[in-house]
Length: 213
Image (cartoon, rainbow, N blue to C red; front, side, top):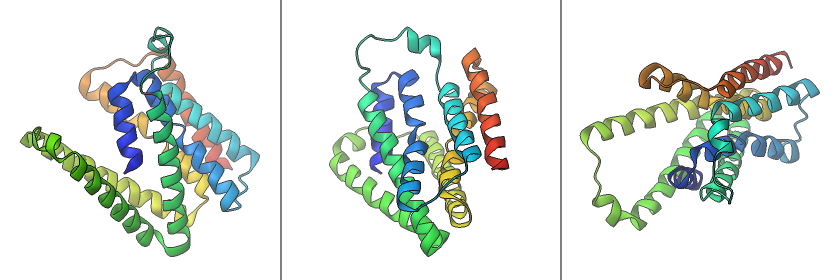
């Protein structure tokens, strides 16, 4: 829950061109934890594929032109983005650890219960502001859809870490910004910038390397 709160706070403060690529580095945090605490030793090919994939995700999730044209000082959302990346990396590692040792069902439910407890605390703290801004019916439907998609993703992640290397599954899970970019092109009519095309190519190459490792 902490990772989600810091992530959305980072997006609120922006700029998104900085926040999104920083957030994509959460996979590297999880990989380091898997190597240190689980004793995983990914091959050189797997590590190369992981780095290429994460760099590709970072390029896909930002517009370098806007990044270069940004403010000269520290972006207000940067500390929150770093905290979010660390939070998602640590959270992903613990979910993987539970799934590996206790089974993916236990890992998934432990993750959901912890998230529910965290959001309950946030809801109590922010109950006045939340009550003043009740979402419309369409917003509630969208929230249910997002929650369902998140549950499917967490389930797939838990199964993956139960059966495979945590470090590789963590890197593969970081490619979700590509889905957001694809949907924005299909439904919002957005046009990807050149570095995003390069990022997609790097992600594809990185995943191929991971598959060959």
